[in-house]
Amino acid sequence: MAKPIVDGLERDLEGEAQVLRLNVMDDVGGEIAVRYGVRGVPTVVLFTGEGEVVLAQTGMPDRDRILAAVESLPGN
Image (cartoon, rainbow, N blue to C red; front, side, top):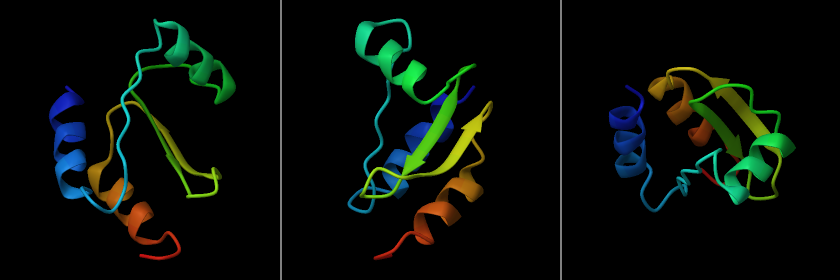
């Protein structure tokens, strides 16, 4: 299950990055899914502060890869 991994990322990234969870079955989540080409769940999309996508990953989240991508962002 992806939930424990995302819960851990949320804790690990507190104060460093914001973790948002969207339901692709509701209006807002569905619009975002279409905008970013989400084809499966779970999907993780990592943005810079300017809104540029730097990582998109479908399937079980790779915690280490996500943390490394956040660390590589400008300002970290």
